[in-house]
Length: 201
Image: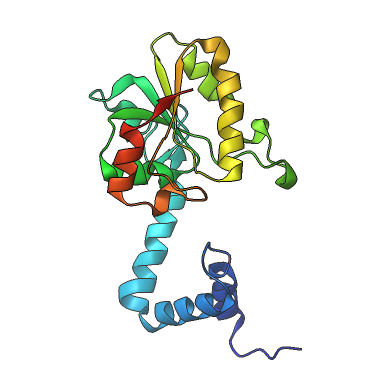
């Protein structure tokens, strides 16, 4: 039986932090201690920012991204090429492509990838609205910028089949994205090469 070494509030903070990606129990304890030591200049502003985020951040009804306005800032941007939709798995992938500044198109965030073993099918992802968007007659190309993982590739294959009736051209990222790689961890040069060398499927 493990001994309690802190009050329930601190234990709860550590427990919640340990649920974040990349933070195990040990890293969560270190993060909690850093926050508690710097309550005034770090913990308090962070808690206020998180409280504001809970109140103001919404899912974009068009593309599925997160923002404080609806539709999101990207969907409202008239300077973007509305004939091209770049499909990504998660917001981190969208941010990675935007940091690289390699394409000026609209996006569509699926909210994950297909994973039958985890009970994630097409109904759990933002796929129906993508099919709906491509049926509007203004979309000419869909770029599948999905992670080069087994799940990402199977999701891309499913989307290629689902997009056939729309008649839009479907492209996938080509060279530059390593097998098993995730877009959020790639550098801007690699992303630029992948976008430029995309291939029709």
